[in-house]
Image 1 (cartoon, rainbow, N blue to C red):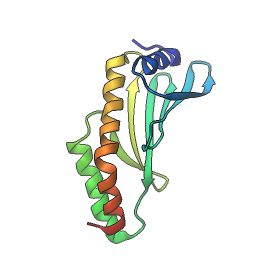
Image 2: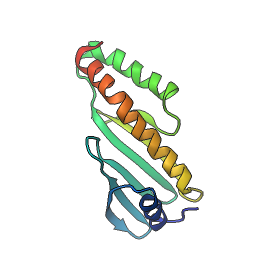
Image 3: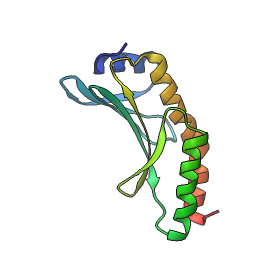
Length: 135
C-alpha cells in the first residue's frame, strides 16, 4: 500500500511509465507522464489523495455545439469510464481521477491509468469532431 510520493514513483517505474518528477515538497510530488501522440498526464500526490489530471482541450465556444458536446461527455462518464471522469475546468475539458493514497496499490493505479489511456485513444477524435462540427 502506498504511503507517500516515493511509493507512487515506485509503482510508476514498475508499470514502465515514462515520467518526470516535479514539484517535490515533503510528502507531496507531481509526476508528469508522457507518451507519444497523447496529452501529458499529471499525477499529483498530496496526502491523503492522489489526483490524476489530463487536459483534453478547450470546450466548444459555439453554443449550438456545446449541448451535444456536454451531453456526450456525460454519456461517456456513464458508459465508458470506470475510474475517471470528464469535467470542465477554466474553459477546458479535463479527464481526472482521485484515489486514496493510504490504500493505493499498484493494481489500482494501473487500472486508473489504463482507463484514462483508453479514454484518450477512444474518445478524443470523436469529441474533437463534435466540438468542431456538432455532429
